[in-house]
Length: 145
Image: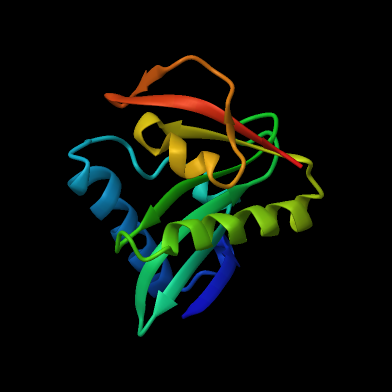
């Protein structure tokens, strides 16, 4: 299993294609949620993914302060295979990278409500009421170190 981290302008067209393909497969097709998945923030992001034999197993993007929130954030967290620990692995790596790269003491996310326990396992806590985004219930969560 290999871990990759690249800024947008370092991605090859093939890598970008595979990343977007994986994200659309999960967020649009699997969750049956038609929404604008490509939101303009990818250009400002670091993209992190786990790959095995040319297949993306997990992915997330890391955003500096002021792009999504006043705090550093991670988002678009996906795994292409459930139950193998890839999600927690990529999330922990994303947190580590964000702490080092941006010298931050907190990370804010907008999480789908069903994933609350997943994020709580690594230390995030709910900081907002539930809200609807693209037809899916979300909450804001914060991780402080």
